[in-house]
Image (tube, rainbow, N blue to C red):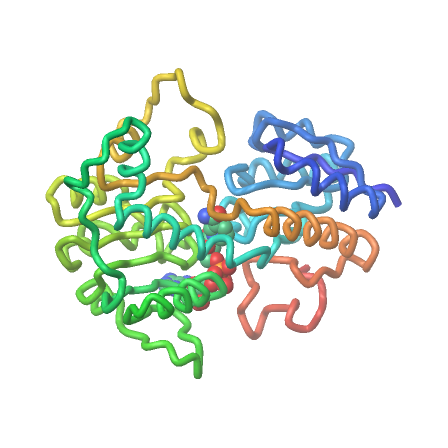
Length: 346
Ligand code: NAI
């Protein structure tokens, strides 16, 4: 059976891998540059599935329309799914995601940001291009012997921890669900804030974790702390972060994600006036590095994303709707999670 898939928010780098895997699975992609929202959902008419990324707004209203058009499946080509109203989708449209495509890509990007920031590589790169070989203002600090606090010790967090240990850093961690027998030293969130020289975020964005780094948390941190966020922008209250930077409390911030990124990231905005004053101000700081949700972007990750997404869609349409990577708002709930029993979520 030929499956037609409306592919929203298409970028040039998405097409080769999806075309390659799609061809071998009798799948036809309708590549759309626009993001999915209430105004663009109509473009999915005639398709059996939609394929979406992190900034497509899969709200209750969008889901209602998809259901009306007979779309059976929302295939996220991401791990995070905070942009999908899972409760609204339940009973109407099934949702699948790519639980892991390259946790290495994200963990390594977090390290790349951290090293760049702490060793002032972004400054040095610009200087030497202008034949400015001065070292003034480029003093960094050794990673060796520093304490890094890792929030979220899942797939990415653990790889990040392994790399940090290689640098000779002391690792402490906080996770709502600590991993058993992992050899990781878990502490309370407050203790992590108080003791860490570097804090890296690797937990999902949920109602509970939104703005977990706010004025209160920053108040408890060490002066000069370096904060790394390659997870989701909403974990940090960006206003509070800016205040912490202006107060010289935060030593540096490395941000691959930003709460209001949906309207800005992934696009070429050079030559435009940026309307987001907060983002402009953060970018203007000498101790802030922003990348545009780039942590996932490796060859390996793109291939794995395409392969798993195509397999998810194929599995859904040829295997009675059963797909290991299906998600619903009840997943993880031991009594109610049907997936644990290899069934459909509904
Ligand atoms: P994972 O599901 O393997 O690990 C997440 C960890 O967070 C789990 O150990 C979980 O117990 C923990 N957690 C859940 N609620 C928590 C809470 N309230 N406080 C502390 N920890 C909590 O996920 P993975 O693959 O490691 O990804 C982590 C995050 O990275 C994703 O949620 C996603 O938002 C982000 N990500 C960012 C990418 C980028 O390109 N910047 C690419 C891929 C993922």
